[in-house]
Every structure is written in C-alpha cells, then in structure tokens.
Amino acid sequence: HRRLAAITEQRGLSFRDLRAVHALGMPGEDVTLGAPDRSNIIRPTALFSRLEQAACDIRPKLLVIEAAADVYAGNENDRGQVRQFIGLLRGLSRKADAAVMLLQHPSLTGMSSGTGNSGSTHWSNGFRSRLYFAKGKASGDDPELRQLEVMKANYGPAGEVVKVRWKSGVFVLEGGA
Image 1: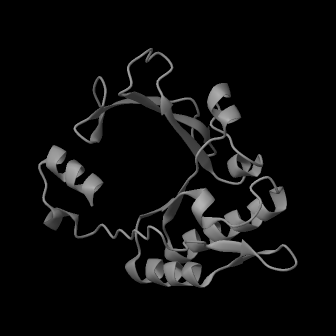
Image 2: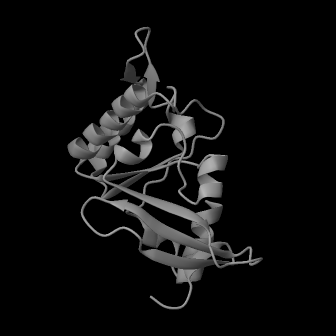
C-alpha cells in the first residue's frame, strides 16, 4: 500500500485509477507455491492452486511473484527441482494467458560478478528472459541511481540498460524515456 501510494502520487493518480491492479500481500504467512514431495518432485501447493484459479478468473496481463526464496521450497541449486518449479510457473502462464515475472535476489557472487545469478543455472536458462536490477555501474557513491539490464532475451537483444533514480519513494527514469 505504501509503495502504491507513492507511485500514484508521483503519477498524479488515485487508487481508483488502479482498479485493474490486484495486489495480494501475505506478510508472515506461508506463501510457498512449490515444494518437494517425498520423492523430491516439486509439487504445487494449495496456495498455487488458488493463485492459478484467481489468475484464470482475473486474466491479468502480468503476474508478479516475489520472491523466489519465499515461494519455492526446493533446493535452489538442484537443476531438476528448479526446472520443475519453472514448469509450474510456465503452466500458470499458459492457463492464465499472462506473463509471469518471478523476482529473485542474487547471491553475493552474482552481485560481485555483475550477473545477478543465484543458485542453479536453470534460474536463468529456464526462463525466456532475465533482467537484473542493481546499482548503476557508473553510479559511484550515488545511492539513488539504479539500472535495469536485460541479461537474457530469447525474443530480442540482450544488453539494453534502463537507468532510474529513487525519488520520493518511486523509481523514475533517468535522462528521458
């Protein structure tokens, strides 16, 4: 709510203008969407089934899930399990006819290398595209400057960088459209 309030204020909107936005926050609750069974096969949880039904009813264009560490109960380094979980998300995408964006925090190595990776390589290989949001490479000591970089794009070029600046609770484009 706090973040949406800052966005609406920055854009000159009201919450009434966000009728098409469906947000669900579940702090402190179990938000696992996929977990291994006794055979280490990743299975959808009851919450995943509820999410899938809601997505099929609402038909969003974009479904954002945050964060992978909260919704995935498997081993992030096990390529097979990661692949199965991504398969669940791919099925959700197809059934709801929506793009699914999964947010994942990078490992220390992923941050220091600039790749943004964490865990199995399948976290990158299993998706059609991957973006990395980090401090700008040329930001120096500017704590408000960030960049969103296209690390992978199966249907377009990789490498594009969008620079943004944190301003009054919102990231705004730096230097134009």
